[in-house]
Structures are given as structure tokens and as C-alpha cells.
Length: 119
Image (cartoon, rainbow, N blue to C red; front, top):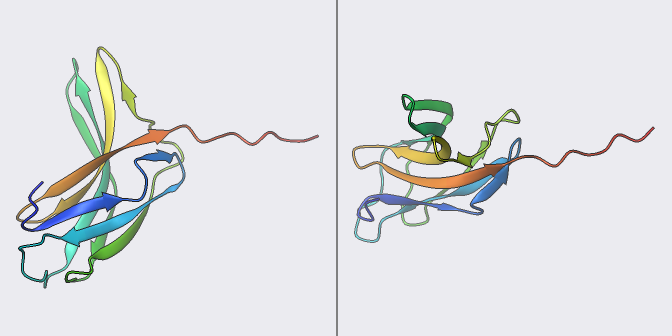
């Protein structure tokens, strides 16, 4: 991550499937004001013994912003997949800034709590 351009701050690093990931894109301290729109992507990727895969779930365009940064809210799909780190493969979630100087921040997706149905 390059602090000269922008970084990502998350309100939480563990999100339940189906919930909103919230945070801010913050301008780097030494960078001039960001005067162009920035695209933010929510994605998951696999790695391990099999072929790596990456799936962009949603993208959002943030308007130009200055030192105050720009807040975002992205919905993690209810169907997941949930984060996983095993011996043969892993599933990692992240939010990424698409720009000349990209940045990304990883987070964990956990199963949503099931509400019991009452008779």
C-alpha cells in the first residue's frame, strides 16, 4: 500500500456474510487532493494447490475527495463464500482501490448467525 496516494480504513475486519462492509478511503498525507473519481472493488480470491481464482463481487465509484477522505459501504453477499485458510487452499476477501497506485485491505467473512424459526 502506498501512503503517497491513498489507503483504506475498515470499520471492522470481520464481517458476517450478508452484512455491509464499511470504511473510508483516506488520502495519503503527502499526496495532492484526489481530483478524479476512484473505483473501489469488493472481491474474494482463492490460492493454494489449485489454480488461483479472483471474483469481483461489486464495485463502487467514489467521487473526487480531498484530505477528509470518502466513506464507503459495500454489501458482502449472503451466499459468501466465507473466508477460509487451509492446508491445500484458502479464500481471502479484500477491498481494493483501482488506480495508478492501487491499494487493498483484507478482511474476514464469517458465517451469518441463523435466527431460529419459532413454531
